[in-house]
Length: 84
Figure 1 (tube, rainbow, N blue to C red):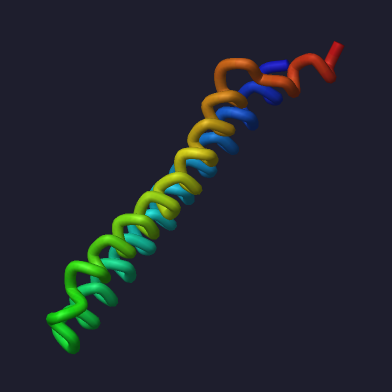
Figure 2 (figure 1 turned 30 degrees about the vertical axis):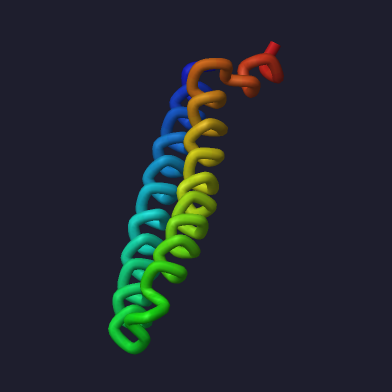
């Protein structure tokens, strides 16, 4: 019983950390590409900024889904029902 709970918590921690790392890398690439494209064509900077924020929201939503699933595993722990 305790090993299942421990494994669930470790898996949830790994899921949250990978989601945070992936989001950080994604935001870094997104911001860098925005700065590069705004420097090349300054007249499109406002249009590109709007599109960048839309993509940033989608990028953040993916990590929030992983965090939600990890919190579900931590607090509800559906794997303990399989034990007994």
